[in-house]
Amino acid sequence: MAEPEVEAAWRAELERVGEDRDRVGETKKQPAFRWLGDQAEVQRLREESAHHYVRWTVLALIAAVIVGLIAFGLTFLH
Image (cartoon, rainbow, N blue to C red; front, side):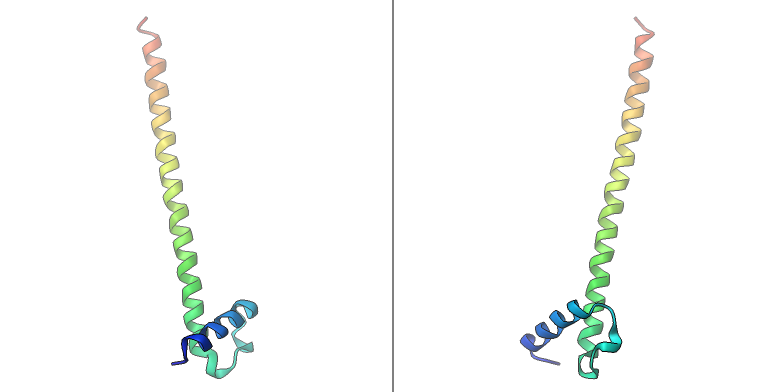
């Protein structure tokens, strides 16, 4: 395992290189895989967060339609 400062420098290099693992040296393969795993986790959390907002938006839309239908129905009572 590399020292934290060295691994931080490798991570910075990986940020510059991106996902092109062929350009990463053999000694940096393990940090590269950890970095890719971290990037995948960040992406998963973003998608999960987006799904959360979509779900609440749909529920709010359904609630608004129900309230609108109730209000429309109440106009016939007067």
